[in-house]
Image 1 (cartoon, one colour):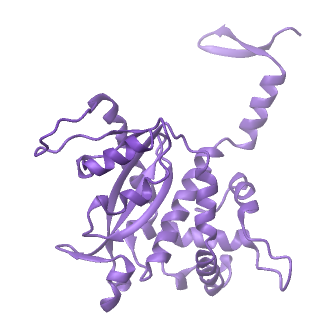
Image 2: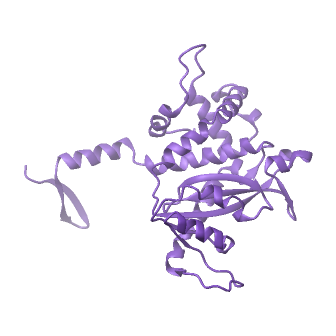
Length: 285
């Protein structure tokens, strides 16, 4: 069925799940995760979960329980530990809050803000040069982009380059990057009096962070916020990011890996047969 974990994805994520040696054995973890990912991608309410994934209460309770235990955060941190630190990009994206997700008097505590378009939330993300997420956060929609910049960039590594749009053109961000041994390549605002070093050519690579938001918003539970609790919505963002990491790191199928290993052990060369056809010929045999 669509949206389910592939075998290579399950093999990669299974060791990161909580181990429960005592008590009643858990329901099939893979089936429950497939149900959670079905809700993430389709955007349907939990009650509409197909029966093949088991009771919807099991999937929802597991989703919330592991969110409170920090399981989703630990998985994304483990996958992002191998990110490309040469380039870091930071940006935000606003998401509309559905009427079912409104908290009325507790909007501020649940990272919801009111603007002209209604209630909104803002996703803050730091991605690497491949557009894969490194750090994620959530804030009310009307909050300025730099509100969480200090927290998200606290792990900026020496020698890396930071790419951001004009909204992040602040002296304290450039100074923080310099203190960490990095360089902030941010276009200056029109009202800036002191000139700064900026490369338009290198800035062109910043489109990767925009592509990241486009990819995670293919999941309808991310494109529109239906969750009242900020923690639940951020967990869905983390799950969408986990799927991106799994696809990037384990996109080669077992057949591809087998062929690659076979070719390494058995040197081959391409021989032209004519009529735009090629064949593999063993060398040294």
